[in-house]
Amino acid sequence: MLSKHEQDDTQIAPLYGSRAMVAPIPKWTLAEGEMAPDAAYQIIHDDLTLNGNPLLNLASFVTTWMDPQARDLMMEAMPVNFVDAPEYPQTAELERRCVSIIADLFNADATGETAVGTSTVGSSEAVMLAGLALKWNWRTRRAAQGKPADKPNIVTGSNVQVVWDKLARYFDIELRCVDMTHERTVIGVPEAKALIDENTIAVVGILGSTYTGEFEPIQELDAMLQALNKETGWDVPLHVDAASGGFVAPFAYPDLIWDFRLPTVKSINVSGHKYGLVYPGVGWAIWRSREELPDDLLFHDAYLGEDQITFNLNFSKASNQVVGQYYNFLRLGREGYTRIMQGLLETSAHIADAAEASGHFNVISAKDALPLVTVTLKSDEHYTCHDLSDKLRERGWIIPAYPLPPKADDVSCLRVVVREGFSRDMADRLMEDVLRAVNALNARPPAAPKRVRHTRKAQAVC
Ligand SMILES: *Cc1c(COP(=O)(O)O)cnc(C)c1O
Image 1 (tube, rainbow, N blue to C red):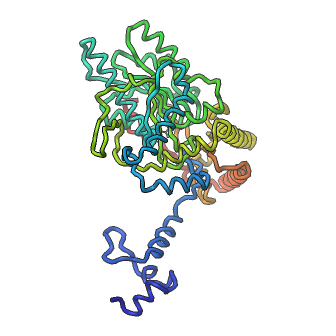
Image 2: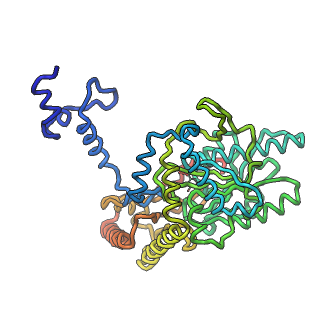
Image 3: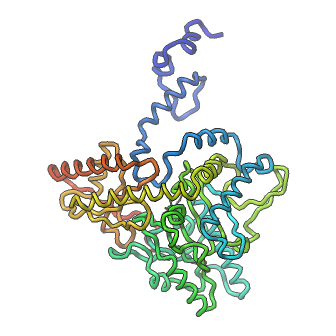
């Protein structure tokens, strides 16, 4: 039985007058007693206000704004475990519809085959799955030729996202990277060709480099591979890492040919939580046909009452992201996505023009690519990109500074990713603050300008 004072404390005391708000809370071990839900909510809510503000986080590609109706639907889906397809057949149905819609956006109908795919937690899981399928298919080809299959490699640019380093390390694949130069910040086709041999499980083309937003020359990579395969009798496929660009290109650049229309493109990954416009985490892995999926990697189970096939690294996961993805497809349609992508590109072009006009920056991102702006400093004698990034953080803006990929990494850049929810007006506020920060740094240069070199562990193999 609680004493009168204790009852008052949990039931009627002013929230910030309650003991929970005054006494220390256990941080690293489980609390002995209970706490009123309002107090627990408020303590954690207040703690989280020390996070950066997602609206001002121009570092991330990941969605920070959705329609309130999408939020409602996603909250309703919270108790539903995605993997329980027999119990929740309608959620599974929404995934099938999403896969079909995305395969269609990637022009899978051009192949005359039926594309297959799965939802994932993000592009990282999708890359792991695609990489495993590529490795298995290569092994099968090698076995058919009676040749060893113990030294697989994969060819990418040194601008790949860290997930490709992970894939290589986790699954014993040698990562062969085409180095960047100051003039070429995407993969070079002849340079990639030179790294390919009979043990190459795939070449990766990136639709939307994380560093500069540029689209890699996918069509040229495909042409090179077609010719090389013909000449050598190999069967080296192309995988497209369209994590960012997969939901930009079909709407903003419908004439760009980068997808299943190209015969060597066997699989594509895309992040639903980037320009698919869904809160994290959802991604998609799509294969041009069922034949690209080795049976060996598909698992059957019947724990949940019916035979079901899965190809995922996780078992249980949330279903709200798949629901959110389908909401966007239904709500926006081709017109809605096109309008949003065009708007984001207009805003990023506006920022690029303002940066150029300021006289302080070189814009190294392209306008016909992802809606982002990457700049280098015209002169970094007195301060560096890293100093400017720190200075902008004082106003709440999160704008990352980082070195370009190996071996262009003696140059650092700043990147602004434009996402849905970032208006032209906010872009103007941003540029005012950038100029204010530049003036402050020029007036009072830091004693020791901050410099950072590339830290990618895999650099040794690149
Ligand atoms: C973001 C990104 C990834 C990783 O995707 P997640 O969805 O965050 O797991 C992989 N490749 C590229 C090119 C990316 O931009």
